[in-house]
Each structure stands twice: as structure tokens, then as C-alpha cells.
Picture 1 (cartoon, rainbow, N blue to C red):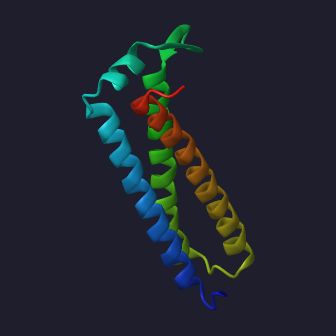
Picture 2: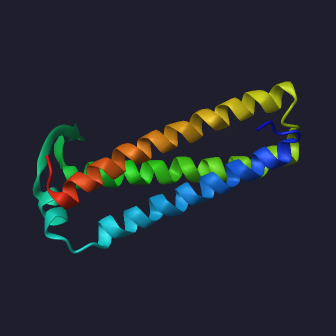
Length: 127
């Protein structure tokens, strides 16, 4: 389907980013407040990854990933509200910003899939 004007593209992207942001925050809230034994075990499971010379837990890695995705989605949401005000989507600058927008959206979706997969494996205790 070809879009004839930029407003429908921006509206579609705003809807997708809003849903992704809500989903990310929901998973983060469930993961932080969830009283599941496997999540408690993930807090104790140390990885080989070091942050400030301390080994971090699997739980911390997932929380950092979810916060990162929430920040990227918030930036995308703000960007998609501001871009149409200042730039026409079919101008040269608009196309560059649109390309950056699509890249960040795909990056956000792929990162979210990775974190949800890790969350699933923690909850179901599959390794």
C-alpha cells in the first residue's frame, strides 16, 4: 500500500511506537514487581558480564535492556510528534529523518524480541 501523504505514515508510526512503549513498560513492571521464584533465582544468577568491576545478574541485564528499549521508544515517540511540525516528510531532510526513524523502530522491535525471549526463558526456566 502506497501512502500518498506523510500524515498517514506518521500516524501509523506513532501508533506502533505507542504500543511498543506501553508493552515495554508493562513487561518492566511485571518483571520488577513479579513475585515469581524463577525471577528471584535470576537475581542471584551471576553472569560473566562486568559493570563497574562487579559481575551483574541476569535480572539486571534484562532490566537494563527493558529500560534501554523504553528510552528509545520514548525518544521515537517525541521525535514522531515533533518531526511533522518542522519538516515535510517528502523533503530531503524529512526523508533522512524518516530513515533514522525506521531504523530506530526496527532496532527497538528486535531488541524487544530479544528481551522478551530472555524473559520467557527465565519464567519457564528453559535454558
